[in-house]
Length: 231
Image (cartoon, rainbow, N blue to C red; front, side, top):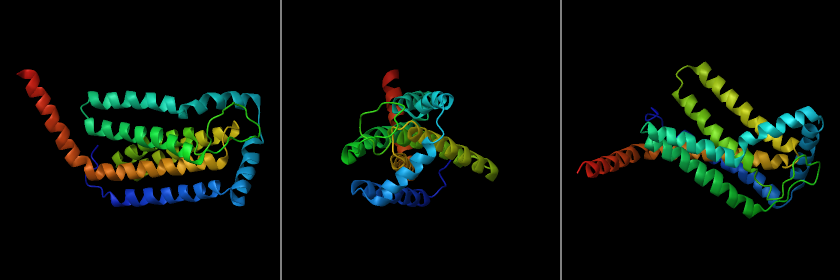
């Protein structure tokens, strides 16, 4: 990816801002503030109000596109493709972000907050921790990273806007499906979005800082391996 000339500062600052937004929601959930309860009830009524069999069937299928296991599978395929094209640094960055931020980080946060699932209308039965939403976290990080890379690689402004719009709409749709199915509070998916967005921008900022030395290190190691294989 030809993004060497970009400054990491805007990405790191944006990531910190998203992390602060996550912290505000996390604080409200931990202390069970009234504004959290009011926000959740209001949006549950709006999203779960128009329930139909056809819509439920469609949403139950499409919501799995944000499933953590499915995202991990797509990440493995994408990373293998990058490694095949000798884009080792990019593959390590993408795979490492999914592993440490989505899989490990998301699981740790769930254990820390240990929030129960909603007791309202559940169209899909779930029993593990609710906050933050694993689907929201995985979808935001995976599709958000792809969207961000495509935006950075696009030269025309209109393409950047279209890619950003489509990315946000798609992630927002997956977030909404979790509330519609009754397996998450709105603040669960919103927190997953904020945490996932923070992970995307912070990871991108770190990558911009370390990409040059990382490229040189990987290139040197690959050359060493090749020399040993030819001896």
